Length: 339
Image (cartoon, rainbow, N blue to C red; front, side):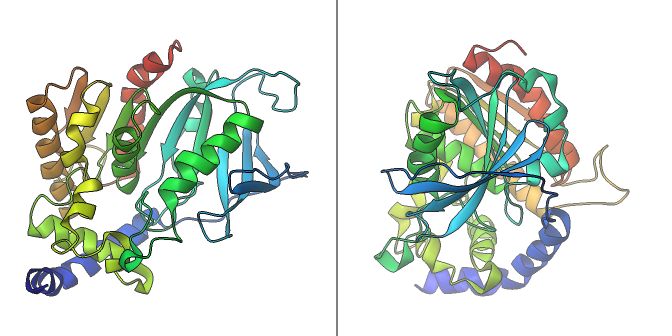
């Protein structure tokens, strides 16, 4: 406990500043909605679709009531492939790209902030963009040893996956990518669920939160967002060290060695896609974390590691859109889809 208190005290002011910057950059806006279809029947696996909303061409929002989330209803956006018809009897199942949002964003982030919906190479892929909470961290929360709500990992990898594959045309070929918090999620899901994803990509991801005291303090600050008790997520970084390591991609590198992995990050200094003078201590921290993970992946013999540590660049959408496009050949190749 003394080490944890020191970390929290030392970095609280720095973390609050980081959160304020992220809120200004990533805070969601309400999407425009159009047309609602009938809900699907309930799932025996603990989740059910209670509403379907057609948002735009090829964009469908599912409202899913989840047992893993305490019975709450959250949204999942689908970017559908050409010819997609989940009502067709014996219909086609499509290769699937999961795109995970970052802290302070939501399930609309990727379509709202990037050109993903206009990317022609994704017209033969079902893109899944699930809600993961403002700061859910793609984890089943420790909750002081009690577990329970929220269990984002269970919701995504079990409940939602089964729903999508049963009723919404998702096939068994999957890859996963994400930014920031979602970058960590993409690495965690690929490592913690061997065989579920054929490749993973993380853009400015939290790749090694246990790297040092600064990294621990920063993520604890995120955990404390919106008035949350930060110990609910993974517990104390000292007393619950095993829980932390189980959610730190660096310690799971061995499980990623056999699949394609794409890591990218800037160094936090002003880059070509930034406003003059912009810097990001968060990106600088994540850059050190990604270098550490890349080194560990090489040490354990990772077979298909691609890195783009592009130097100057901050924590922003212009870079993440660029890196999505840069990694798509790898991701689509793992799915057997021509880009």
